[in-house]
Image (cartoon, rainbow, N blue to C red):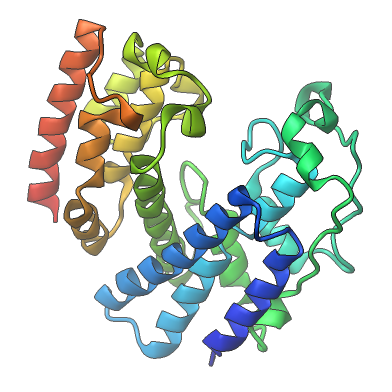
Length: 297
């Protein structure tokens, strides 16, 4: 299936413009989407994929976070826990809505009976009409629809379903790797308040949960519900390394070096942890990450 990248970019730009691309949070997601597209192409190329599949991987990368724009419009947050699963919403935006998304409702209900208007950020998007888009705006043929939908819907899942076809699984893994790599890039350039909404002092004094350390030592991702203390979230980012499927992804991670900066000076914490146990654990984890990446690139 042939994909016209210029058409894909035009349709993407037209869609996100409805969400006010001058807004910083929208701009961040636009830039993230474009970087992930480029990373998807690089990872796909390292796997020996032909041009049509390189174009497909690039397109999936660009569209993987389509749900973020509608998530922010409806709920005023990028937190899935306080709104909805953005990956599933993205698949819905592209494939399931017959005539655009529903109109904005200030009191739209959140999980647990909360309402959206209690989130002050949502006022920025009050009255903003939803973007309207179809998968056919990006790609003319429907041959790869199931694969594209699966890759977008599952890109944030803890684990992929066991019954995915091999080809679909490959593209899912490509976009999942690319997304993790760029999230680490974004985290390395951000501060504690932006990423976690807590102060540097809270991070400096933070303890570490035993379940989070077990995840690191087991070389696996940290489950959302296991994160209790601010430092737990930082370890969660470090554990992204262990979940990268492809050697090229690990090479990119090592080249960027940002994961080591996150371990050494997490989220702007230049002076280090005041909690001695936490400080010692982060020093250990940084050293082990360097060794692990050297062995697995």
